Length: 311
Ligand code: AQP
Image (cartoon, rainbow, N blue to C red; front, side, top):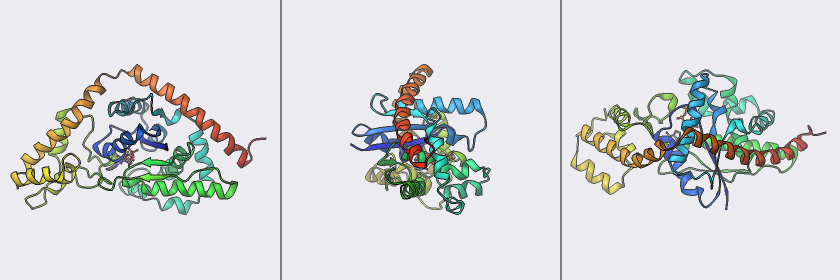
C-alpha cells in the first residue's frame, strides 16, 4: 500500500481536464492505497479575492470529489487551510530554495504571460505544493502533465531539506497518464480555468453543449482536430474511427455526438452530486481535516526540532 495524494484548487468549477488529469486516476487508485485528497483553498487565493466565491468553491469542489466516487471512509478528504502545517512547512522550504530556481517555473511564467497578477503567493506556489505533498510522506501524486515540473520542485525541496537537516522527507513520484497528459480546451490549448476555455465537468447538459459548440474547428480538414482530441477521452479508437468516418466533414454532428458522450459520463455523477447536502460536505471536511492534521502535526514536530526552533 502506498500513500497517494492529490489536490485541486478551489478557484472555480472543475472541468473535464481536472477530471481526466487528476480525479479519474485518483479514484482508480484510491481504494487500494492510503489516499488523501485536498481542496487547495489557500492556493486559490493566488487568483481569487472574493470570500463568498472561495467558500462556494470549497463546497463545490468537495461535492465534486464525492460525486466522482471518492469514499470519505476510505480516502481522507480535507481542505488545506484546516491544516496550518502546510503554510508553516512552505515557509521553511522557501528559505531553502532560491529566487532564480522559482523563476524557472513554467506555470508561473505562463500565468503571468496570460495577464495574471505576479503576486508573491503565485511565485511561491510550488513550495506550498511541495509542503502539501511532502508533509504526508507521499509516494504517488496523480496529476496532469502540466504539474510535472511542480513535482520536480517538490523533490528538490525534499532533497534540499534532507541535505541540510538529515533524512526527513520522501521524494514523491508523479503519476501522469500518458494517454491523457494534457486535456485541450475549446481553443485547442491546455484546458484551464484561468484561460476561459473549459468544458465544465458538472455543468448542465446545456452548459456542456454551449462549451462544446464553441470548440474552435478551423482545421480545414474532414476531421475537426480539437473536437477529436477531446472525444478520445470518451470513446475507443475504433468507435471514433467509425463515428468520424460516418460524419466526415460534418462538424456539427460530431460536436453533438461529443455532447452526448460527455453527458452519458456525467449524468450519473451529476445525480449523486445533486443529492449531497452542504451539511454532508461540512462533516466530511471536519472529519478529514482532523485526520490530516494529526498526521501533519506529528511530522512537523520532527521538522521543527530539526530546523532548531524547538527549545
Ligand atoms: N487540461 C488539463 N489536462 C490534464 N490535467 C489537468 N489539470 C488541470 N488542467 C488539466 C490537472 O488538474 C489538477 C488540479 O489543477 P488545479 O485546478 O489545481 O490547477 P491547474 O492545473 O492550474 O488547473 P487550471 O484549470 O489550469 O486552474 P487555474 O487556471 O485556476 O490555474 C492538476 O493535477 C492538474 O494537472
